[in-house]
Structure formats: C-alpha cells, structure tokens
Length: 245
Image (cartoon, one colour):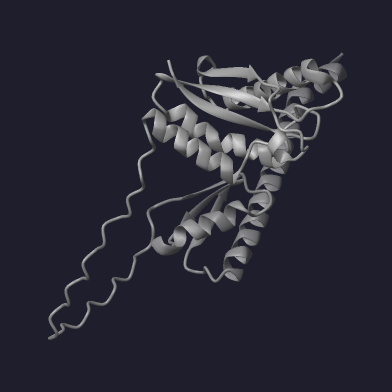
C-alpha cells in the first residue's frame, strides 16, 4: 500500500513537468518561426534598398519601426509579401523626413501663366422630334442594324449599332416613342413568312434596347413586307421612326 501511495504522489508532478515541457517546445517553435520571418523580411527589405528601419514579429504579425515616411508604405508592402507573414503595420510613426532645400531667391519676376483655354463644349443631345430623328438617321446610315440572311439574328455589327443607339433613345424626352420596322427581302415563303420575319427582327432589337434600359413602353414593333428584293444588307435591317405620344 505504501508503494502505491508513493506512485500516486508522483502523478501530479509528472503532469506538471509534461505541461512545462510542452509549453517550452511551443515557445521555442514560435520563437523559431518569428526569427525566420524576421530574417526573411530583413533580406527582402535589404534587397529592395530599404535598410533604415527594424522589423519585429509577434507570432506572424510584423511591426515596422523607424522607416522614413517616404519609404514606410513600400516597406509594408514588401514585408506583407513575405511568405508566412499574416499582417504588417507601422508603429511609432515614420522616421524623420529630410526637408527639401529652400529654393534660392530669384531676381527674375515670375512669368504670368498663359491664359487657359475654355474646355471644349460638347453639343447637347437633341430633345425635339426632328432633331432626334435626324440623329437616328445619321447613326443608322453610318452603322445600320443588320441581320444574318433569312433570320432574326443580329450580325455582330448590327448588335453594336443597336447598343450605340440606346443612350439616344433612353435619354430623349419621355413624350416620344419609337416605331421599329424590320426590313426583309422577298423570299419563297411569300408575304406571310416575310411579315413574320420582319416583326421578329424588330422584336430582337427591342429586347436588346430594353436590356440597355430603354423603357419598353416607348418601343413598338411593326411588321412590313415592303422591303426590296435585291437580297442586300438594305433588306436585312431595322428602321426606327420617332413618334409623338
């Protein structure tokens, strides 16, 4: 019995010793990590020509001290980029900044600055029906809204042309609406097929304009089978007419 009691007395001692050894190992590991991070940070700073300050670590968090103000931001970025560093901050303020030398007094009177030119003024977008229609016609003549043959699928150029028109239609006064007419060439399907394709082309452009924030209640699709029959781009386009609401 006395031997058993002796062993029981040793158990708390063993637990304490084990805890102390574990704490010592953790401290040594942490200290080793800090020393490694500090050494690699110092090397990175020296390689960048920044040798005027110190880097200290608490765990993986760096504190920079003594760097001049003009170098502090760059030094922080370099240390934060070192592998294993969680964060970096400047402490104790930046080092002293050398004042710029005062310019020598000049006996030459300062020259007057050249007169500034007024900024160029851009022409305001039209707000009347005729002005909006004229701008639409100009843009459509330069870049028509065109489609692939016998389909309601916009060409790449036609899609871009429709997008370029959206700001003009969107920003015009809301007492105007826009009639969109799809032009088609005569085909073997006859008038019925031409009318359907005409309307589908107008609807394709309307859906694109709505995605560009043009109010849908200002857009009207109209079918027309009065297109030319030469099969060119003029038969695969959408025309837009401005109307008063």
